[in-house]
Image (cartoon, rainbow, N blue to C red; front, side, top):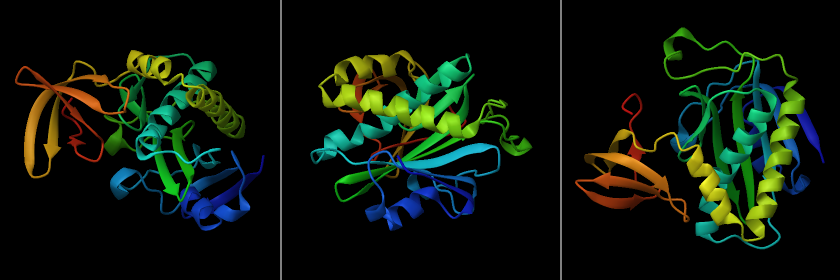
Length: 234
């Protein structure tokens, strides 16, 4: 396994995508700080020193369908959550589709990007960094002195275990586990669908990775590309 470490880089995901031919399955790129960290929909990703900022490469043995690929952020989420629980006990949860929460605040963000048949999995975890005052109401740090390189290796190792289960048809078991940590379940949420806004009650994440939302007594299913859940509403 290759483990490249930078003091500063624009984005570990970008670096891995631009040099993807030089990486093998589960190779890792990490950085102490990022200057152009991104989340989903191009959102700016807080990237300060003391975070675990890293990307690793997944090279599936066979090409994944679009539906299978949409499950990877969920798989990365439960893998990261599981690894963190083994490092520091506490109240962890998974916010569909790509955030790990700790005591109801965001601890970790995930961005999975496809490059032909391969996938770059980018993860940022607040390990020892101080959270800026203006986002303390929504974000949290582990405030741990745990070795960041060891934490990164633990997360990637945990992902490889979950991915083997996924490849062997154990997705039903995994999605049940994910729902046990479902942060949004039974919360009232406001949903943007196109130019329309709806209110509903979040329910389970179903097998194809979509989220159930109860609206006016009916259960409707939404994929991540269809909706935006407003922050500070749930």
